Amino acid sequence: MSKHIINTDAAPTAIGTYSQAVKVGDTVYLSGQIGLDPASMQLVDGISAQIHRVFQNLQAVATAAGGTLGDVVKLNVFLIDLGHFAKVNEIMTEYFTAPYPARAAVGVAALPRGAEVEADGVMVLG
Image: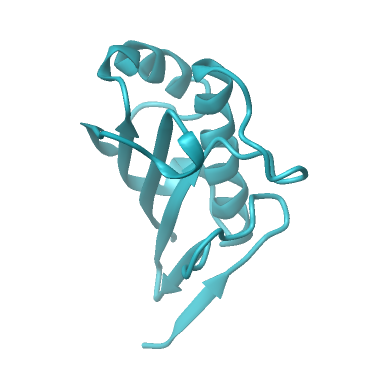
């Protein structure tokens, strides 16, 4: 199977040596997104705004790959403060509906550009 690189201007451009997503067959691997505004490439202010922006960025990449966040089967969330776990759950319901994807939430020491939250995922189309 060949791999297809997914790229969209509706999400932040890669800030490293990675693609926004890679599609292999019906599976799409969504790279980690932080709360960068795609127009300014600046981090949005505050944890709630960053969580929303992360899901909006993932949604843009999912759309570019031919899917939606409803096609996400696995989601990984990385937080520099696990005290924001409840806020992630609350905001996540605005972007995902039941049945929810499998998920991990991990506390980390730091994220790129001083972000407070990052998420990546795996999506299956079809």
